[in-house]
Length: 360
Image 1 (cartoon, rainbow, N blue to C red):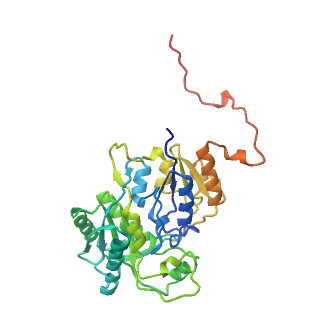
Image 2: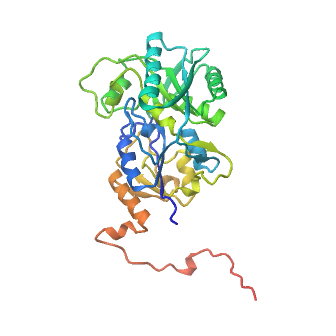
Image 3: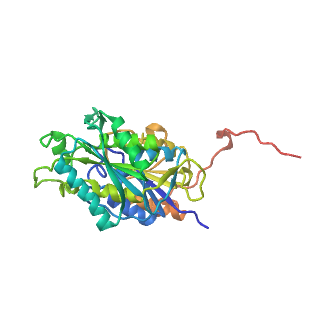
């Protein structure tokens, strides 16, 4: 019996990826890869599109810290048909904006049939602050992480399997970084802080988590990029988070016949200039085929060659999908080109061989 062909797709958050650095704009890539893989393992930055989302039955929605632990072999992934979603709202969210998010939660229950527990409001404002590195990559901090953790613990005790967080983010509609992002040219200035929030909960409680920022609606802009336009459609970014978490796999540290482990990942597709992440480094030490996409440029310049990672470098995601098809079929991709190099002699003198012993 053939083992399921499993592909990982990573587009790191907050590094200005040309594809996947905006509002769910890597989702078409995920949809295409999901057609050639039995299982697709990816993360919220790829699948979240604010109020837009797509049901991919063979995709596993795995938060970034959990993905790192999975790739390192510390955690396995247990697919779940349905999770009870606990919702945390930041005390800093204004009453009208809080109501908008509660209406999203009720709509998800009534229209999509999702299973939510009661919600919790943090006992202190989280006070999110945004930061940017010289490279352009973004990150952030929260002033009261203990308040966030108390809220998550309350929801888990009440029966939540996964946690959705909505934190109030600073409004700065005139900021140059925001305008560049809306026009498809900059880095998502919220993404780094969002990752900090979800990482904290996953690391502490080992349950799936994803985050949606609460923001005041922006003024209309006729020049918004199609890649950023999903975030212009309504009052919240929560719908895609609830849908993703509803079927997110649980984490396990123990053997389980239904769990998926890192040694089952056949291939990993990544941006060619963003090879330094923990999950990528871990999987590069295994038999996983690393496929690096040149066209998906980022603010980073961490390439596989510089790290000594053996990878297949391709121009585009279309080419990456071709390599995946060949890999799954056991075909050397070079055989599909008009020129192929002849087989070369590997001299025994060039190999450092261990001693060979024979038993009599």
